[in-house]
Amino acid sequence: MKLERIRDLIQEDIGRRGLATDPAANLLTETAGDFAAACRSIAEEAQPAVAIVTGFFIPHAQLGETDGPAGALFLARALVALGIQVALVTDEFCVRALEAGLQACHLNKAVPLITLPSPSQANAGNYWSEFVEQPGLQRGNTIWTDQREQQTASHPFLRQGPFSHLIALERSGPNYDNRCLTMRGLNITQHMSPAHLLFEAAARENITTIGIGDGGNEIGMGKISREIIAKNIPRGNLVACRVPTDYLIVAGISNWGAYGLAAGVRLLRGQTNAGELFHPEKEKQLLEIMVECGPLVDGVSGQRTATVDGIDFDRYGEKLRQLAAV
Image (cartoon, rainbow, N blue to C red; front, side, top):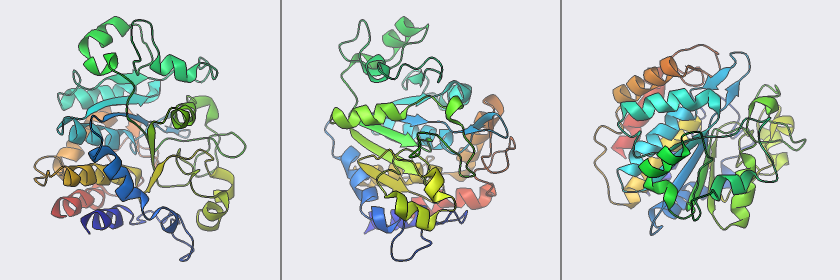
């Protein structure tokens, strides 16, 4: 089955994270059917509207990382081409990178870019209502900025009802001690807006949630037991995120998970001509723009390079060719 082939491609543990250290019970066996279900949930939705939350703070660089924003931009390119409404949601430290990426793809007028409140400004009690119920909107789906009137006028997406899907893409979430940690166990809670509150509220609002991650510490990984993550991921008992999503896509690199989700939705919608979308050179060009304008850094090296998780781009980008072949 082609969806299974796509899933297997994106789950290559290229960084040796430990996704399947225990052959019998691991992150892949626990989520075997989630990839196909996530693809179908979007492809079969009558009027899908998708909000993608991304952004992961790298403390040794004091910047956001390349894994997440690049995949979010890719999903926007893929889904908008299918007539699916998309909004991108992130922290201040990733806004400029995504702005530059959307402009380079000529999507800045079609895809709203929403800035989350800083951790110090976030009001946990009102976090969800401030996201979906704004003055002048019946039930919008943005956190207001100083340009809120301009945003509402230029983006019809914001004037319509609540979105159908909320996706967390390489988005750090609280562990069982309510701290957001890197895979190395470093505490970044004070740098991350508490976006997990959106996913907890979405579960109550009957909005489909999807998590995409590669390390056990991202929103969505709460669907897998802490014990399973601890058995497979180094420091897993410490870093495991407690927040679940309806569907969880575990990937070797989170951006690969986004590429796979885009490929699966396109396949189910009957779009089999990959065209420019699954083109490594184009993806590298966009990544270079985002790294320069963000700036963003490689999450492993902490360097401002057009690489992801310490993987050479040629090796990283080859996954796009493999997906296009499917």
